[in-house]
Length: 280
Image 1: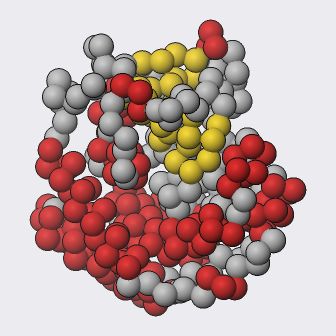
Image 2: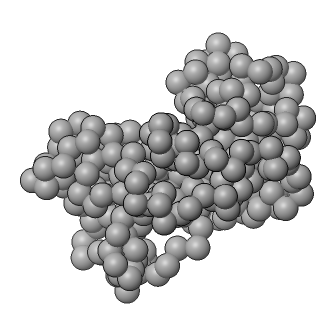
Image 3: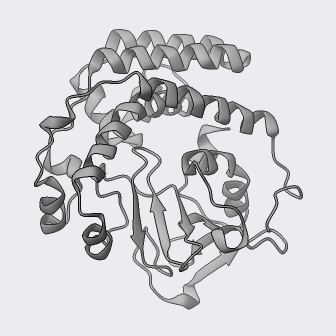
């Protein structure tokens, strides 16, 4: 079984994300959203149009809940990362005062480019701003995603949805897993927690399907924590091979705590992952 003892892991950062994950779960348990407003036909339309649900239907985002969650994230950072306390408090004040429809739309789609520009224009740390925005919107996105899965024919969705982006919110996968029982690649969206099946040796960035141009990188003899790097576009995807390790219970947490794979990918000339930027 794969272990991570040989990896240079900052346990303080890992613990930070473990506690943040608990806070996210608490915020979700407190949420009540009008999920009945989602049309029952939406999953079918997603497959017919080949577009994410968020592109075809207006995802409702409660502005006041979003601002409350942003403040909770700020309070969490102030407590667990004193060095970032002042910046987190500043970001919370700006989100609370400036959360308009445009910001909410960028948050729903997690438009990192637009959100980063907004942060820079306001003299904020882009990495911390993105982290706070994503975690402030994540509880509501997860509730909507859960309801989408409940009304969808998941077998049909897995058979027909072959896009590299999430069928619900449109985000690209931040990590994937190779399912223990059959080795099928299952993609994971860190924005709404949706999962979907995807071709094993296919770059999710440029569509390169040439096995000779897909590089699989690991640390030493570890066969659990993997990087699939594309030699065509230099993008990469972190992948956990369940056959040689444990069954991950929280892939968002795995995505954030495997930042050592992001650093390894960068050493090999690959880019595209957000996590290494968020923890820097």
